[in-house]
Amino acid sequence: MCQTKYVIVSRHPAAIQFIRANDARFLGAPVVSSATPDDVRDRWVAGNLPLHLAALAREVVAVEFAGQAPRGAEYSVADMAAAGAYLESYQVKHVEPVAVCASCKREVPVSWIDNYGCMAAGCNY
Image 1 (cartoon, rainbow, N blue to C red):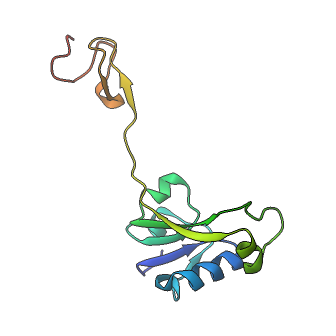
Image 2: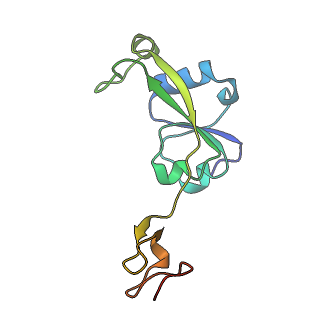
């Protein structure tokens, strides 16, 4: 588990170098190749994360590309620059899925619905 406010999640040396060169907050940040919830929870994270982990982070700084991203073989910082690499920040929020109640026809959280209707005020169940 990381003990700092900032962490980089990546297996790509060029991406790590690019992040550190373009966002000073990550200059001394530890690098994790495979993140756990405890690695990212309430931290500023640079790199690519699955959405369920990104939702735990305070902010996710992703490497984006204006052009075609380098794929396949390991890439260099020069390859990233040629593809128009830049950093973009995101905040990801988990939301409960919704559905339409068969009884009152309103969109409500899935957890509110059972076989008869929903818990919304005014539902006729």
